[in-house]
Image 1 (tube, rainbow, N blue to C red):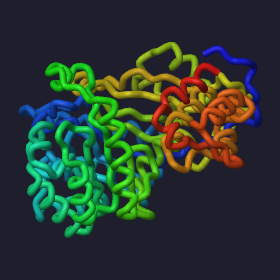
Image 2: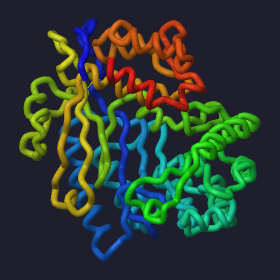
Image 3: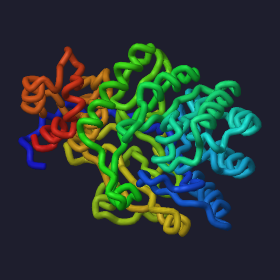
Image 4: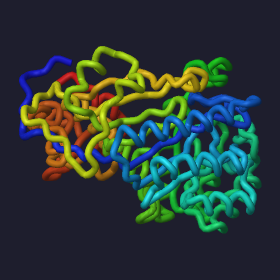
Length: 417
């Protein structure tokens, strides 16, 4: 990215304490034809090896970073596919080394894995929120999507989880051919969920749907996008992020950490994390070296804030790492790390934060990055405000409804500025 001399403010101020944890559980009862995540069906000995390695990685993360968790999120894959003793052991490893979320702890759940006894177990382990892969309440649509549960099973699962005292978010997939979207939305709301994530069916390369030649028409995508908001707004749900709707106070606190570009730990195969960078570590990591346990970054002082007395846009603000897939991760390989400097941190924050209806507080982003964001990106901001894709309200920059639809084009302007 070529750019003029950036406008620097003071040294960046980032919280060096990591407050969010994502745990990836890759095992699934079956692989859905639209899925391109790191998932696999379980084989003998794999879960045992996974749990042993997870314990080691949790201990290592605890030794490297100051951790005071606000949120924990178990995703996958299908975390609820783990047997009772397995998920109990997994939670034990997290609690032993990293603690537990003080604000929110979410478990992703497949409807076919739910029973009253299991819901009670999950609640007792400390989960207070369930993200349930409903996807549709129409049997024909579920069959097309390759889901193993039917509509009755989805309804029963949500009802059981609510009865166990869990907050419940329901996932829906939209723009599916022949899907009765209105009845899907009305039916899910009627079950009593307080949060809905509605994602457009996307055909990713390498998936079964891609091999079959399944396509999604842009008109269908846009119609589903707009109709979902219209129906959920009538039910009292606010669209607080492009694909996420909640009743007041029921937003996903964990996912808000991603959209606000906070640091978070990634635990498990395929898990991504964004970590506080340590001054002086940039040479090693920027060379693309695999980070070995003997040369990890030192643990940050709990409660301290990063403060570089000679700020430049090339000093690292955070470090990003994505763990390798299971068979490599089990060997102890942590994957490669890359450092994120001020400009990349800001463009990442814009890409994620503009997904939020509230947008981004540019003064806060400038404080965190050390970069005068409004001065550095004045041209990109002005151009997109003129097009009607962004609006600037005092310190807050947000996408308009039209801007949400072309957000990749908007962010490209900032990347090329």
